[in-house]
Image (cartoon, rainbow, N blue to C red):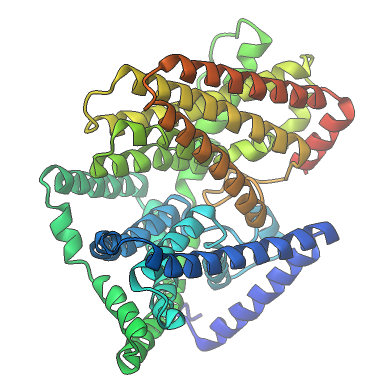
Length: 511
């Protein structure tokens, strides 16, 4: 039978995509639908604000600020493509429209899966924040003249970059699932990062970015602001056609990847683990189980590597000062919690029934999950800080204290919030898939926005305290915030020990 793409298959995949979206929408409660509409309205309002406010803010500021942002805009456009490719590659091409277990009863074609991954890619705060930053900076540089026209090239670029990233993600996933694919993919990733490090150390990265083809995007935006309609229309036509072609052709590597066996996942599930000595206590036994559940999970392992290295590489290439590095741990730990912490009991899956039947105190299970989550977040933040410190110079004592306090405090805040959400709103998720997320995408947007806001504000507060020159204020504030987070975490632990609450969570995650 033919295996190539056809227009009939594309039409059928679009129809299947509508049906799956309606199916997922029908499973939502009325309250969830209202939240979804409110969330969509908030995102739209913030997008408009990100465009309009900087455009009209330009007149209130000095012109030299515009000159500072103008040369780096093409590099920022290219950076959006790079980070989107990295996200898609780490998650195996994108997000799953239908979980793997459900897809058995509701077979979805690979083309439909590809279209669904594209549609759900923007449901990510990292994607939204980057998009808002690009739109806002472009509007600020070009001003309010013909604002709608100057934004069109940037919006089309966001779509094209997302489509290109999905193609790259599917291709890398196809390589991973082939013979010796895991090592080949690791080699490709290592070679890329070594090349990037070489460009940074030889100070040639700026020259490479100056020759970026994304300069045309800035030129097209300037044509729109200046009223050069013919040049703008020609660019938009080319970009829209390129986006459509990439979207359609992306179904080919998606088919290649999804028709191959998931080697890495199956190797971990079918592997033989040597027996270890009996643990000294029930808590140690639970810690072993929780740690193994994380480090033997493909999506969690990939995500933690990306979270640990990417912010550090950005700081390394940007030569950040220590007071700016203080903000990085908040970004890393909030991203780490989004891998599994916001729905931490889903790690047990069907094993939650067995685990809840063990003759051990439920407090031990809660403490174990808190300790492991805190360990993972501190480990990721530590690697980021280590990379950032390589080119940051020698810090002062106040900067070191501020960095340590900020890292400990934001990790405690994120653990507290994650455990609260895990108890209040559990979800049944199969984290064996490399493309799985611990909660539905719309819910993840809300979680990530709240975590990013709180951790960024906390990091900025400690960054400001580093300038005061008195580390005692920093330590005092850190202790106060840790006490508050501990109090809130103790309340969540009390709720978990309630048999009715615990049975509801176990029933959901094991379903």
